[in-house]
Picture 1 (cartoon, one colour):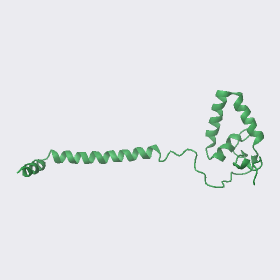
Picture 2: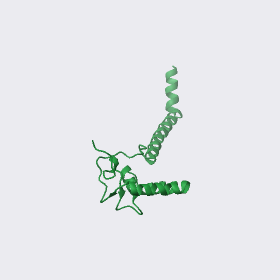
Picture 3: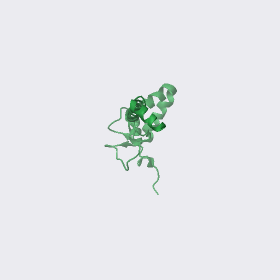
Picture 4: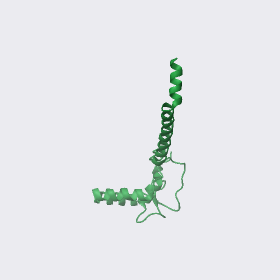
Length: 129
């Protein structure tokens, strides 16, 4: 059985990034292992720092000592699905909705043209005979 150690990334692919890291590479390494952009991890850390102060610094220092430094680019063992999957983008859904509303509008205009035409009156009178 493979035990979780610092050297194997605690069996979770947790490393510090050697090439994208600013200070210790903790934020960049965590972002790489979870498949998120590095800027997002840094914003989360800064937010944590603003609200907790010393706790964020202690967690960052713990990450420096507990995570091993990865040399070279991150190796993806398997294609991991992103943590946040919202389906189709909002712009595509709005475009589909706009197309559907235009189709409904065209059908409504066609019905209005027919109901207000003399053909409709003729058909109605013929039907009433």
